[in-house]
Length: 223
Image: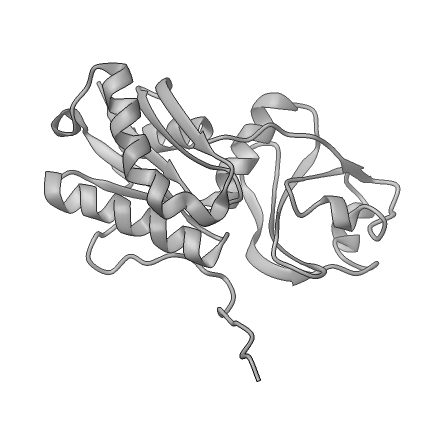
């Protein structure tokens, strides 16, 4: 049995879930991205209570390591590492875009190539590209979208774009092979991925792991 706590604060809708062998036992979500830090630990206690479990029952903790919100990634990573250190259990850090692609494959098995997109402000997105067999064809990257984006793939393939960064790309990516689809995404899909990682012993080193920011953080300085 693999009882895993899954944490996702990388995107606008944060979530935590407790999963057993990849099946969700309890889940909590938060739509206020700026409140992920204050919400997270209360939510973890809530889902543990709902499932009738204790933290010491956990076999591992998984977190979406990025890309995504800079602050959200730090919140989730710090909490997950803290639990793993205190409980002396394995740590699993997973690419956010890969988890989104897993959700898409389950919901749209005939969608062709899968292109998850996370909004990164202006015309930039965090994105990647996956085959319907789960193989990553394009490494996770920050990309400024223009009319030539993904043309090399769209010439010969149908590409399904989804995620909160895809809406602003719809008027720009006009190739006939481009499909913009709705995919329901939540932290439960991290529970599926983390269970497979657990079975395969694919754990992340606790001491030197850090969020995958993908691009440098910047802020505006008031004059």
